[in-house]
Image 1 (spheres, rainbow, N blue to C red):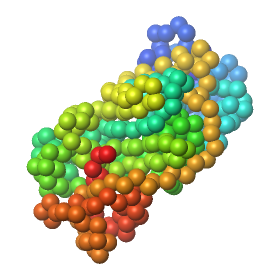
Image 2: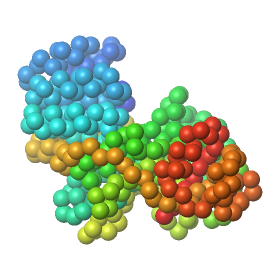
Image 3: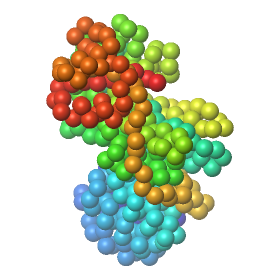
Length: 373
Ligand code: HSE
């Protein structure tokens, strides 16, 4: 396999290092804007150099972001090149264009590292779904949020201090919005649901609530009542109805999610034959992520295309009725649905996920956490 690599940052460098000693694949050209010199690969700033090189059969996209990653990947597919990417935003956002195009052109499209970094989640989901009906996917899919919530719970840190530590350790970016507002997890659960259920979820119908408004007093409340707060994603399919959402969730201390430490992920599927299966590991980092990118390249060598058949667009219907913890808000609707109080916070009666997230949009300071089903 002759690889053209887009991007030479954290993941791109890792891919270069892990492929270097292999005989079945090699990075022959790298597109990056920095001045880099590599012993075994040509480096160019011009994507056309890669696109026009007919000897390159596979493009590894490790540049991140939507543009120009989308244009580069689309052009590469049209030129008949296989795609391996770790870019969950790209795949979740342009699923409807890229997956059918890859199928039409007969090229492989793999993105295992896009969900769970070093965990072979999507490739295992691919195997799981061919034998049974997948009923549910989701779990802890963001290491940065888990690190922050874990530090607040176990070490009693404030949100600001936990975030600073996550940034110092390189988990959280200088601008942490994508992680802490749940957008990264949102992309991952959309992509996982698409693969699991053979659909193409309409992203706007998948509500997301992040962790940025959580306070130390909320965490004290959870601990004293026997719960641990985690950012949990959910994708479910039953009788043709799909529900999907991302929200802080209160997990009883008896559940495995409650003890997931630091920046680890724990991603779960429930299948009609297998029941629950959970996958635990490093959700980010140079070599864990590059490991799965290179695994995908090895799968491309065996002719593995995409993970599941492409299905049409589906809107999530989030009618699940859940109880919620709500802090930092007071209004008439909240009064109506209040079941009990934990100090200043409210515990609601069961309300639909859709109703709670619709209400949250007009609440600039409210923090919500659902009670796990
Ligand atoms: N920023 C992500 C995380 C890793 O913290 O899990 C890349 O998806």
